[in-house]
Image (cartoon, rainbow, N blue to C red; front, side, top):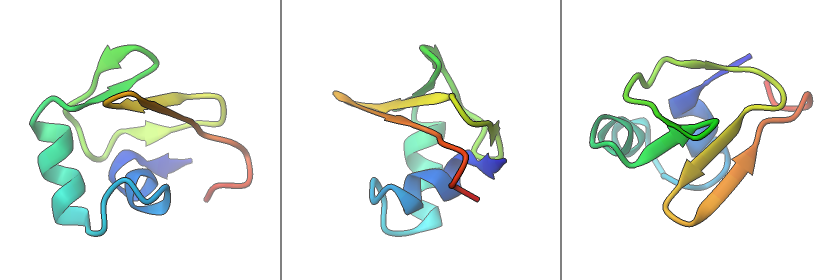
Length: 63
């Protein structure tokens, strides 16, 4: 499991946790096709995170 804000940093979507927070709270992030505004949302393998026109899938190697 990994938090949404940490995942965005790991994927290179944002450089800092602060940037991730603003993106998430600003309504720019979807998890499994649903708008997500909680930066502490726990992601599990198989979850899909969409930011703009890019989608990232959480896999088991991400911790």
